[in-house]
Length: 297
Image (cartoon, rainbow, N blue to C red; front, side, top):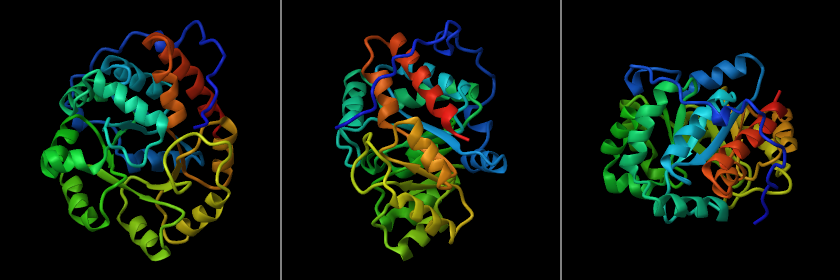
């Protein structure tokens, strides 16, 4: 799989990656901060495009994940997607699958991830959205999972393989726990179903730019421009584009096409996962994330 080249720039002397963790705020994790839809509305009101980075929880370890969440928030992330590592990730390409495997090998359990988030989310100004496959959610029990996610201070959920027939029941479970369920639409989603998805989606609508798995690509699918127009004809909700986005030119292009948010996954994960040490990974993540954030209007 092609990936974005590792940035060669040196992290600035006063690197945010090296800054000490702020003192925890004595507020319950789930009781503070904006919702996902509030965060997206704030960006849209300013006429800007939301920066939505994705990282895998526990790669290379949970302490680094906590530091990365604080770093991305300090760099101006509007929403952060946090992937729950899973061994059978159907929509993920090689980079994120390898990242999940490292996290699982390092002992990143769901309970450990939730405990980490409960400590970190009160320190963040942006909402965190959990990206999880449906199987581990169903194994735990949808009600139990949603309650644990809420307690951890998470504001939204993305479940890429959520069966269409399960959307209504699971969305109700999410709403009961003050969580917004973000739904996905793809280039091959029929027009009528796309309309139903936009009506049911919370937080924002996730437009998958290509049919296939995650992973950096050389160019952005030109059909994204027309898909954005189609979606915006049937909804006023924010629309964020993900899959295959890895360069400043990509995010500029998607923003020019009218996306309300840009999601960067595999290329972001590479910075942490392929570094020689957690410290180097955080520095690489900072340089790379800055380059994308600065490219957005």
